[in-house]
Length: 218
Image 1 (cartoon, rainbow, N blue to C red):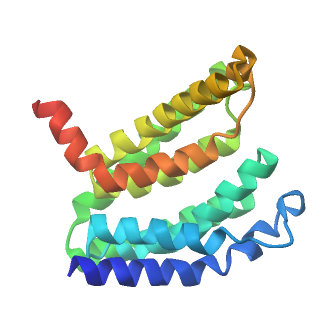
Image 2 (image 1 turned 135 degrees about the vertical axis):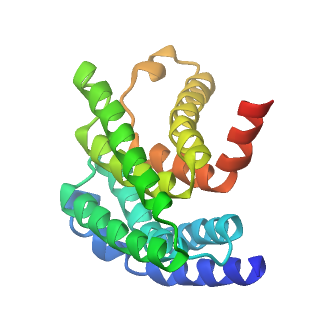
């Protein structure tokens, strides 16, 4: 069953990856002649999600989120922008598909948890933006609400590890970059946070439940 979910998810997201250039094209500054990494990235992320979630109803909202996430990651990496015109419609689609998933799975608690997770993460990121707007763009705040919902639906472990993991990967990457360049000023440079949010979310889906259980129970 898991292998089937991996193949299905990877293939579906690879197909969705073909649409990434159309999303990227909505931000002219981010457009490149070719997007050679879009399909492989989408396929790999889809396979990870399939292996982690299995053949379960949450795939209804998780798989469509993958190519959008790839597009947003590419856009943010190139322009330091996360366009509202992509994020809010994505949130609407995730909400609708997650509602269908909860109904089919007879799991209304998952939907409630997703709503709480989304609101909590949004408020935290909004506070961080308000305190230090130079350190975080408001696009990150909007994206955090989407990812908080997607992760919260799966569980508190996925939510906590997914969001914390984003900051951890961001910090470690910055430190390694400064170490490689032998330049402390690299630690003060401005980097797009969106890609790290997306990587953290994927990590939360993959290992969040087990890691959080270990941290809590010891």
